[in-house]
Image (cartoon, rainbow over all chains, first blue to last red; front, side, top):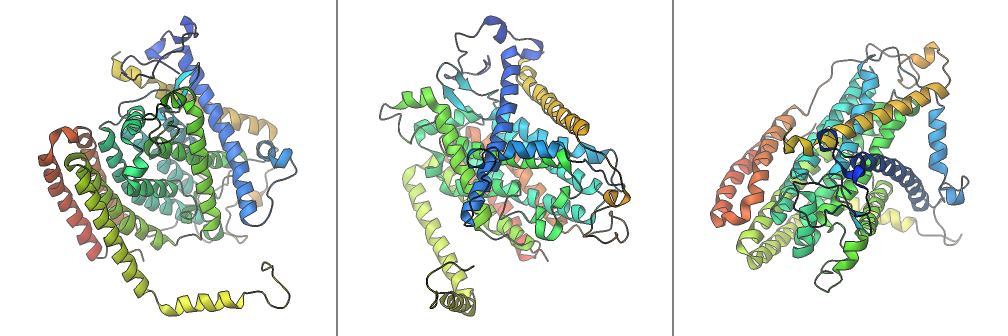
Length: 413
Length: 121
């Protein structure tokens, strides 16, 4: 949407119909078009979050054999705007024990970093509008790791300043979780940077169009990145830090009304952000399907890429929501073990395999993949053998007992 | 102003935009919402019973050793990012060199694992 003299990207063209005063740089290289783009981005994030909340409640409903929101608007689709109105008219409480300065500051530090990270996402091209990206920073990959990490400080501020034991516990857990899952995420990103030989997100997408999508070349990396980001934003099943059933909501127990709504907004915006990042880094960004350029269908992606990007993003959002309602929550020790003893070694394996692919070619890479799979199979077999057989037998017996009796087939009430 | 800082000016603009958006929303909420103060409402939430002691109580930060390990590996990844960009042009020598560096770090991870640092109890 905007121009950048430092960039050599081919798609980075200013639409010709745009009047000159819009693209003329003002203070510090910012043009009016830049400011409009930023406002549009903010509005997009807010609206996407509302749609996302409605989607999540529908998904939850259908997984639990309910129908979800129904009454406000067609299929309950106006439920989220109604909720926003309700939140706006709720009383905003500040407990007497809370720190008067840090307590109101925390929501800013939780939402703003998430919004800032949206600046680097290459949304892809759309007819007449050119390529949607606010700024393709050359250090985009480092930027997208560094900026969301500030969110942790905001959550600690919220948890500490509330003067509540639950929120203090929650913030301690948030820190432990953030530092543990930051590592596998960064290690998985190294593989991506190695494939594209660049840290610029737009270049990474374009290199995937030439070499094939990263999700096929480094599936381990994609898995590690996706799970680690899911944990970074404290989504179920990694939501022990904000677990309602034991520490009643974690760091933001004491927040109410719209101030609490800001934390909720930040959480759902982070889901949108991380789906977008996964799409750009691993799922080929705005390309229609892998290898479409070789078949001469590249022009479709060049014209309507934005739509394909959004489509992939929404699929990832649905997967994240599905995981929330289908999987039980991990205990805190299981959570830490999963990061340090599974994701981190897996990330290193992915890193080494990608390094082999880049220098020694495809055959050693394929041998490496085979060895990894064999090793994983051995590990899985030993793990299964070590599990107590009585537990499995117990589950089988219970499942057999749940089979319908004379009252006929039906779901357990 | 040099081109480097010009590239990053949208970040500053977006920061102000985000802060402005939250302030505006909270202001609107402040104008619309009722305000009735009672002692019960302003007390700390602790499942209905009065709080025992202070909210800022002593607690055991169990992730202390994890945090030290995190620092080591995070600094390593900062070293690795520039290396990944130029890696393909450097050839096999860079690969073996990096494997040496990584194996030392991985040895550290295995050592910590064996010593029971990675056990949360």
